[in-house]
Length: 384
Image (cartoon, rainbow, N blue to C red; front, side, top):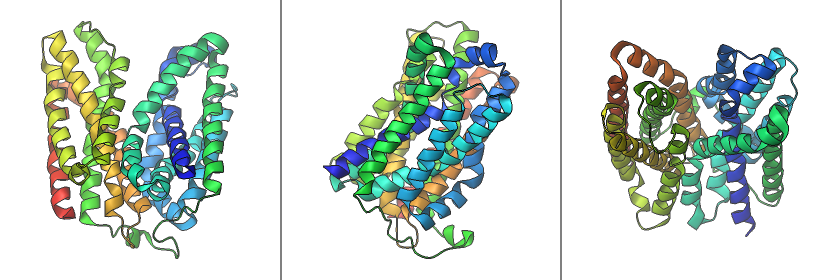
């Protein structure tokens, strides 16, 4: 029972970590008016976490391997909470940047340590479903941020909203830490120090899976970053907004969780390949169809298939872990490629739109998805 409860609170902690990543998006106009933040400055605040992940994910994974996933998760949660609390008060743009840097340091520890903890403490029947749900922590976190912004901005303004985000982070972190107190959370091997070169000696399947995840991130972040602008410029009113379409991602996470909890668990990587192919078609349709119904259908299918891809990639990591390649290092490589994809995806997509138009963005997303399908297919072959 304690292990199951710990899984729940670690997942909630992770969802709030994802919420910290996306907490500025719902209140951009308010921050401009109340705190004088420019769009460029808010862009730096938003991208700072992705830059941290892109640059130091592997060193962070080595650090986590050294001190253990439980201590790393607690430290990361504490840093996220501390940075979130510093954002509550308007102490100037310099202090906001410092607060965001603290959040970024905590975020990178949490996103690598949390799935490593889940991999160790989750009961056997819940391990793969828990990691599958973890794959949606960013989308779920963004949805939580949007919900809390809608509720708290009406009640207590910007400071109250930021305080509620910090409180959610603090409460879930405390509950997760209390649950983990009575559990031994240790990976297969945490003794001894290793060099970066030694840490990079991972199975080929792990690197292929990480590259596939990078393709997924580039395609997905390009899709959801520019979908609102596309709908506005194309003057194609849909029954659902871009923000509402994002809420379909957790459906894919849940579907993936059900898949890996049943008899199809051994086919996870094959399912990722199929989901990538579905994403390639739906992404192409979304930006090239003249029919609003086809556009909406393509966007919804893309969101659901994306949730399946992310969840099954994370759920596949435990089977790749070995004595010399613990889960935290594999997750570090996956996080590194995801961070790089987050940084380079929007500029590549923007350049594609500027030079070739919106249909070309659909082609770019299609190519990223097909590339991901091919790479994950080879990863499944290599893993065998």
